[in-house]
Length: 357
Image (tube, rainbow, N blue to C red; front, side):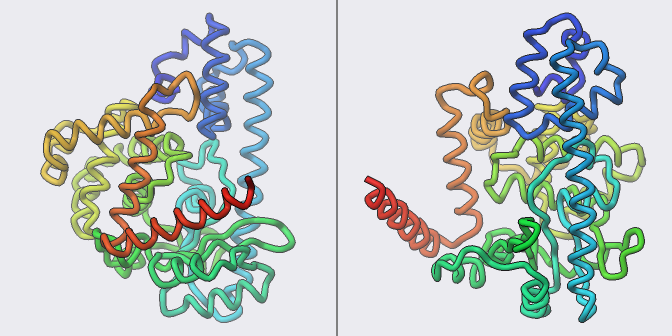
């Protein structure tokens, strides 16, 4: 899978049915089959592959087209709901890629839509969404407090008619996190798109930086390789502009996101062969952990960012993913708050297990 995304095994696929089968399995487990389908079509490779693989790829392309149509419709419904009181909102991650027709939208399939709204309009936003069919499905008092007091988003909302999931953010980093970033600067560079009146999307640099924060700080690595591939496509597309790298490094400093950017550039370059200039990699090293810690993070991320498939796992993969999950909570919360949270969650899981025995 990594070799395909980095563009190094196309010829091997034509002559090796086993390599095709392995790619299919790894791509499906990484939620990247639709992207593989689009990339194969762009390289005029699809019709040279075994018929079985062609069928899977054509089906995956159809899924991506339908998914994008659904996301665009959902964005219009969100704007219709929030326009009643002229609430501005910014699409994030996959929704921004699709509506903004970014290169990262290629074969991008996802199940929820993420939006950003001003914090002072959060209550109004939630009320308008509830009035238009979105409802919270998690009524656990602790989880409600966790999201509303500590996190940078509301509890996930689900539309009662369409079944779509919506995550409403008021920042890109939890207020309790060790990294602090001024969200007002993020809003300053967001821009309107298409025929929308109140919908914006981040500019390319902020799309990259937010993707880096989400991947390397949030600990949600189920789609880690997909998110790394998003970054790879964005970086390759934007780097055609000579000023891009200087601007990206400067924007990371402005938003205090130098460390997530270091990890993004490092692992895109190493795993997907993204053509990041050596001077840029060297400059980001000043924001990296020490040499010993870098080796340890490589040990973890090389495993966690591989497809979640038996062919890409070793005896340490499960441990690596668990440790990065714990790390993400360590980055989000002060020690005492983290200890209380983990004890609470552990107790709830134990009680659920006892009830099922």
